[in-house]
Length: 374
Ligand code: SF4
Image 1: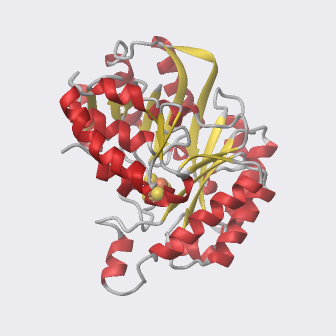
Image 2: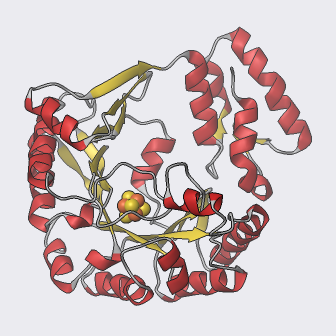
Image 3: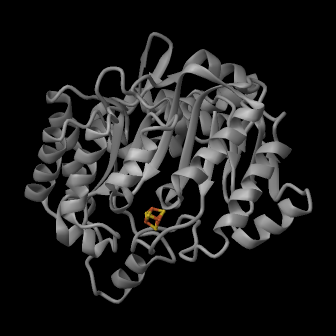
């Protein structure tokens, strides 16, 4: 799997602390640098047949379709595509114009992940999104008119500008629009964001956790009634529309991340991440250096990662595989907390898989971190 990080955005959303720049000055140099990184790292993936190619960001839909196509062709120089490859473009509603979609429909892209976030104008304004509620809806319809069936939308719940009634309307709209995949996250207040400043200066109330909890469980029940599988804490899919990209992460498959701040993993113990600085990234690549840092995961870190990721999915975590990852001594240590969680009902063991019962999913991060080896 390859992930390509496009580090540009039109404007800064109030809650976001991802890596991006709102200036497009370095766009052309960035695309050339990424093409070169694809070349420099052509031998990094063991499996050269890709099942997923994902353009994320940032806002990849800010690029011209020709630029996106150019990067796909660069990937194709060194890798082959599985016949059922998923090629995803993260796109913001305001970028999905008729002309953009028309061009895009003539490329290899077969999946769109649209940053809708909400269909409710006050939510979008508070989040400082570049689109309005009309564009939130019309962009999805337009994409469908151009033949994109495999569409995921992002939705944010628990916003101080929303409430349960609005959240229900957002979800109903999603059903009416016949979108087959949803990724949904609670609004969180991250450091160094406008939202954080507003909360500190009492300009806005902090998102309420118990309301978020209620909205989460309402969403889970409602989407299941409407034919979705709640297959990961934040992800819902109609049959046949699970995200291959996400599934590769959850199965600890190798992946290669291209572009500033992108992460890579060799499927075993080695992880690396590119520098989160656009001009330094371009400079380093220009001098044939890979602008990345690498770490080798210790036994404990591998265990903790498996726990963190595995317990977020409906399938859970393969218990025998977990046992193989660490020494007998460490496993005995881990078993004490696992047995405690099993006894308290926060974990269940089914057919060799450890899972968090769905009624405790909202607490999954805390449950997982209680199991970490330190
Ligand atoms: S468009 Fe996405 S990446 Fe860009 S600022 Fe908004 S949330 Fe962050």
